[in-house]
Image (cartoon, rainbow, N blue to C red; front, side, top):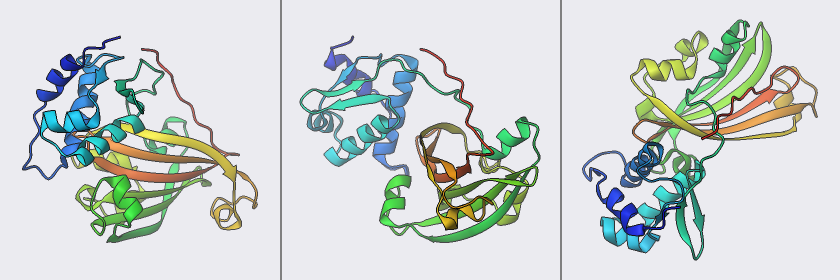
Length: 254
């Protein structure tokens, strides 16, 4: 494992950070570090300087460094240990890099997808949503809630929040196309996502649109999706009827 922190620093000093860009500096830094990890310039095991040292060396604030490192840790790309520092994670099992929507997945499975848009509303971001989308509290976001059906059977309730800059489509377009397809159609390149999959029992309110009984098992997914500039494009919280849907994930080594 690489222990030469000076070598890691030289790599990071080469990153082209645009201080006049509308993309936050911590997002730019996290994006460049992720690229360096994927290209092998920062190989697994590389030990980075601690946050105060990086802040001084890169002429960035400590909060900027902290948010960049936390973003990378959330994706599983680095490991942060108190008293040790931040280290590039070892190679791990990963999902295929292409991001697909449930609309696409259903079509690929031979089912006929359809969508009912339950909520399509622009409003100021709450503190939590602002943090998840890496925007300022009060910035405009789209709150989007859809009921996704396959062969006329309800499959999932999909709740998403998107920053205003990513919204170049209307409510009617979501009826016949997947969200990611619409984003790509706007020229947004979706690069990666961090998601957490869980399970719980449905409340009465959650069970109703899925035509399930209260207490029915649900699969849950929370996903933060990033574009090729490292910007957060979407935060999603989705609920799937476990009786009608399962996740299929291809795992690759290295």
